[in-house]
Amino acid sequence: MKVTVFGTGYVGLVQGAVLADVGHQVLCVDVDAAKVAALQAGQIPIHEPGLDKLVTSNHANGRLRFTTDAAEGVRHSEVIFLAVGTPPDEDGSADLQYVLAVARTIAEHMTGPRIVINKSTVPVGTADKVRDVIAQGLAARGASYGFDVVSNPEFLKEGAAVADCQRPDRIIIGTSNPASEARLRELYAPFNRNHDRIVVMDVRSAELTKYAANAMLATKISFMNEIANLAERLGANVEAVRRGIGSDPRIGYHFIYPGAGYGGSCFPKDVKALVRTAQDTGFEPLLLNAVEARNEAQRNVLFERISAFYGGQLQGKTIALWGLAFKPNTDDMREAPSRNLLEALWAAGARVQAYDPVAMKEAQRIYGERGDLVLVDNVDAAVQGADCLAIVTEWQIFRAPDFEQLAANLKDRMVFDGRNLYDPAQVASYGLGYVSIGRQPVQ
Ligand code: NAD
Image 1 (cartoon, protein in one colour):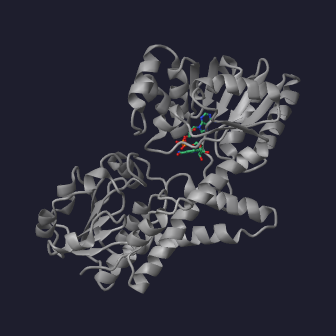
Image 2 (cartoon, rainbow, N blue to C red; image 1 turned 90 degrees about the vertical axis):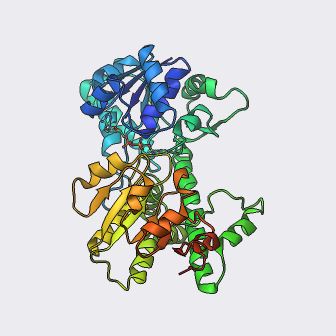
Image 3 (cartoon, rainbow, N blue to C red; image 1 turned 180 degrees about the vertical axis):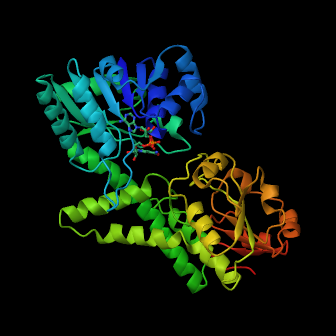
């Protein structure tokens, strides 16, 4: 089947490559000419395990192509995916300008019937807006082609995006049109072989399902962070509590890890957008407000601990930082808790020596050259000459450090761990102080 994908970000590029890999003829369109040129030259703009090979091989065999030519994209296929960004607007609502811009482009260049499949995360009612924009665009041209707008939200996890798209837990198809449903079933048939993963529902429910999923996951994290804060004050150990509650199958072990707050391009913006959607209907979402508030506070916890240790005097201190990406296996730093920490440390007069296995280029892009940020290329260089170490991302490489070396290198022999990577007693046995989340500090 011929497929067009608008947007070659984490969602569009991965989905395009995975669809090409099963035999579809995929044309990816992006307005970012530099990105398209890089992709055409075989350079992959993001870090996603397995993506390089998939893009390169399918580009080489001609099934995956890239263009900035939107008209060509609309002509290429009857099936058009929208996978453009929906960043938060100033009031927290999802900014639909990119989605609606593509809708206008489609209307402008349509030469026959189309199925527009929205993969971007968008508020309930957006499919109707896209439909209106296309209808108006067609009317303005005096054209009348049949089209449908389907909601098909994406659930991939950055860091495991290729595997998630190749073996999705579920494929949500939001449409009440049997012909569109049949077309999407055909498109996704290669991913739906062993058991039926397709869930068909009306378009509004599909749009809400995506927000409900992310809000539920964010709620689990904020809940656990709340318990962690309580555990610290009550002399308890949140890691023991986590194991204790996770063993109940009704609760489960997934997504109950306390830490320095959730980040990334999805949870913060999607919770905010759902809050906004609720308020627009006159409904105050008490729980979602609390989830968001807990996370905002949690993102400052590590800085507060470091600042408290130094009695608020961080001027001239050098902090080693392990981890910049918002989670392991990605270079994405959108809304990463590392950014809260970096910016708070700089505001307090500290300098930072940071290391991340893949997000260094992204940090460089975001912050540019500055005297109070030194990006180094390994874990050891980050701690050389530093006063203390802070950890914000649970990369595998940070899990078994040479504690003797750390004790020798860190002037104040302190580790502030925002991801609870170590056993406090073990760290203490090397003469290091250790402050983590929801556990009693060792100093
Ligand atoms: P991204 O910012 O990585 O990529 C978006 C791409 O769209 C960019 O390359 C941009 O240049 C391009 N674009 C913007 N306007 C365009 C236009 N008019 N025509 C063609 N291309 C255009 O975004 P992303 O992380 O891939 O997310 C895309 C959507 O999917 C968002 O709504 C997001 O919430 C949702 N989503 C993201 C994830 C994730 O983990 N990143 C997971 C599920 C859903």
